[in-house]
Length: 261
Image (cartoon, rainbow, N blue to C red):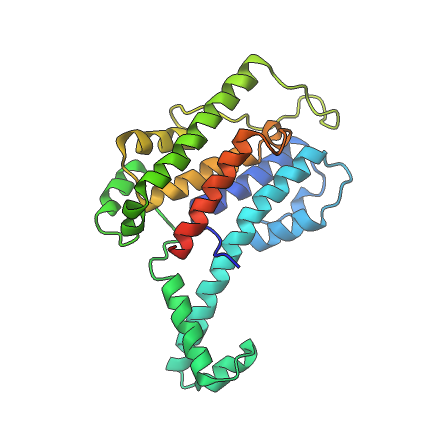
């Protein structure tokens, strides 16, 4: 199984905000039970049911819930590593630590801890995403080596996302899609924006133009992709549309970056 892309706190919070905003706009009477923690919101999305929820809202919710689920996956890895480390400091044997995990040998527990250490070696769940912070972190971050070694590939993927997002924005501006028949009057979602001041796509375009690619650049790419992927107009596109291919390429790149391959 591939290592999922790292999800930063900013990506987590953006996904939570999009889900909450959609349900406020349709005046979902059950939204008070949604909660604000990622696991609670994922459970709400899975259990909400179709009553009173337009299909596009449910589809966008599931796209964002997968971002939250990935956040939870990384949080579980952090929690497991802390439990193993602290358990050892408290005098538990490797055999005692491995038993609840189904690991029957001392070496197996040590191997698992080593793998967690390798996975989380450069972990920064609260990645700073401002352009200034990205520049300051660039020289000191060991993950930069991977980015520098794959710079041409990264630039090609980012160029594809930026180009397809611009074309999509131009298409939606010139030919507004009809509203979903299930949408209540006046209900919409945030339209995908072309690169411009204040958008994640603008931040991504700035890094691409300056060739200032950093670990945070890939987190910004994830934010931009998540916003596009959950937009109703994007959900309505043919799965073979080039924008979907560009979004898949971003996530495949982020997964490779997370696993270091």
